[in-house]
Length: 490
Ligand SMILES: CC(=O)N[C@H]1[C@@H](OP(=O)(O)OP(=O)(O)OC[C@H]2O[C@@H](n3ccc(=O)[nH]c3=O)[C@H](O)[C@@H]2O)O[C@H](CO)[C@@H](O)[C@@H]1O[C@H](C)C(=O)N[C@@H](C)C(=O)N[C@H](CCC(=O)O)C(=O)O
Ligand SMILES: Nc1ncnc2c1ncn2[C@@H]1O[C@H](COP(=O)(O)OP(=O)(O)OP(=O)(O)O)[C@@H](O)[C@H]1O
Ligand SMILES: N[C@H](CCC[C@H](N)C(=O)O)C(=O)O
Ligand SMILES: [Mg+2]
Image (cartoon, rainbow, N blue to C red):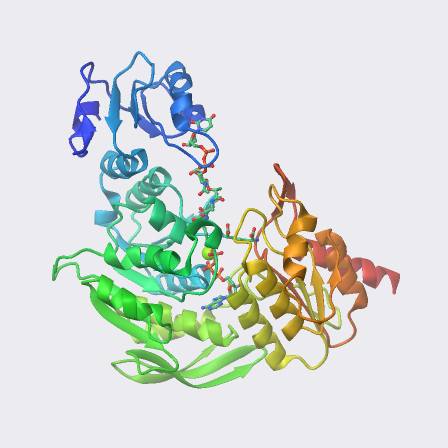
């Protein structure tokens, strides 16, 4: 595509004088630049992309988008906001792929990954080809790809959507993080259905206040479009039991569909029965009420299922297909995933890394626990500090034995993070073991028949970030190994 053609999509830039090169790719990382690339200088959180313009040109960039003049001998196009321009250019360069996909976005503090995976399962059952973008991986059909972010930058996103279109994907389902909404990573994504799970505390390092955080999530609903097109109706799926939904209702012109357990909603769950191995409930829909069974457990998973049901119903999937799919779904990696080496106590790995999710998951476990509950929990470094004391307090409140340890300390001292956690404990007992492997081993050694060990916070993650280092670490493998070692000794 010619640079001038690409720029015709951008309406806010300083006209440059110079060549009109052919653009073969768009890059925001000078290290990825090839001959013919357009390089976009982005001011990051650690470094400033403008400082890499020269390197990009040396690597073959034929034009540069920047917020200020940079000293290079190729055309430089000055824009007010590089990230904004990047979203517009990526959408144009890849042929506006979201116009050709049924696109479902899921936002909320907890439950995005679980809900998107359920929706994917339902559409597959409906024989649609699916694409999935989120925390665990990106997936096109059966092929999976690694990810760095839950919701990637617009460049990666649009490229992925293009690949989905080329591979005849019918439905793309994605998690939309508040960071992505706030940074405009999803500008230009033409959503058909936007889903809200819930809003509780997280990410106050980035959003500063709960009001700002709530506002950021609301952008998904505000950006659903403000026109009525009967060939492509837009739907906002809202959790009626969460107070933030009231605000989101006013932010969108899309058709509203509500779900809930407590307040009267379009889609509801009633008469919920829960056992350690699954649940059953009456699924109430505007069409009919059916009793459904699922292998998922926990009241929070009823919400995730209802959100998924609503998103699929408005996407014209039949209720019978939805119900069949729900009965099959066996769980999402790292979410209430059990580690079973034939031991006589239970080990559960879960991604709870917020106060609300930790409370939910511990309450669920408590419902079924016959004996002692152990929790191993830490808090991520370079992330919301104010959630640390809350998570520690919740751990001691709901578990019999709370073991505080490291999550991903990143650039922080693990001991400092643990101090922040310990400050939240009011008089209860706890054990602190900085090394996560040792903490898991400790619990496995202590556990007696019938006890339950919850290893919280890292779920599917296969690494631990300590300083600048990313080391291999998988709670499931570490627990498995510890159980084997204990068995070998007995
Ligand atoms: C805080 C944040 O969001 N950071 C994101 C950001 O990194 P950054 O700002 O540090 O980038 P940087 O290193 O300063 O680089 C700035 C620019 O210079 C360029 N550069 C840099 C070096 C070089 O040699 N050449 C070069 O061109 C970079 O490519 C970039 O364009 O841009 C990166 C590339 O897109 C992201 O991967 C990175 O996400 C990091 C990994 C992250 O942890 N983000 C978290 C906070 C996040 O976004 N989380 C949400 C999920 C939250 C949830 O699930 O609840 C998410 O959606 O992932
Ligand atoms: N609807 C829900 N409400 C509250 N807690 C939930 C809900 N669904 C899942 N959880 C808990 O939150 C944890 C994270 O769930 P999930 O990965 O689905 O959320 P997420 O929104 O994708 O999180 P992230 O923002 O980190 O990607 C789960 O391991 C579980 O403990
Ligand atoms: N998407 C979340 C994941 C947190 C997972 C937890 N293990 C941690 O590292 O804090 C974040 O980046 O804040
Ligand atoms: Mg997620």
